[in-house]
Length: 131
Image (cartoon, rainbow, N blue to C red; front, side):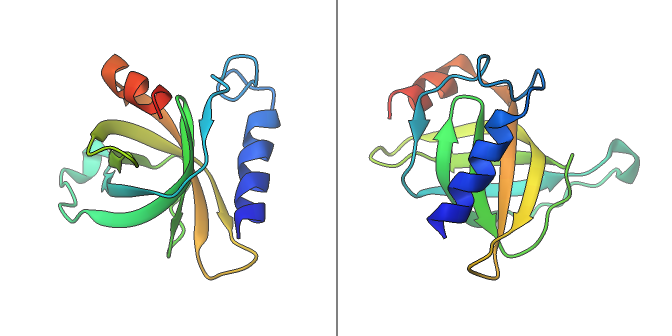
């Protein structure tokens, strides 16, 4: 499964858009399992916040984006409120992310979801870089 995840992440980073240009992305990368808890932020027109937090497992993380695995497809462009449990520490980073890519895993029934941080504190970035 790691092979398809790396493929997904590397494809994301190789595209030459302002969001994913390899020259604008911090190259420090963390490649160990970590916990992710999230909930979908609905469109304002829906006027209701889905209050159930969902847990998933991530395994590729850097200061701009990360990949996690989930049982369902989450549409591209979906906003998520996130709590990332950093491994080797008891720290949790709270942030907002946007789904920029979803791909069905070739080796399991899970989906590989790529998230770009759209709101993360400087402290959160430093905690990720410290891994």
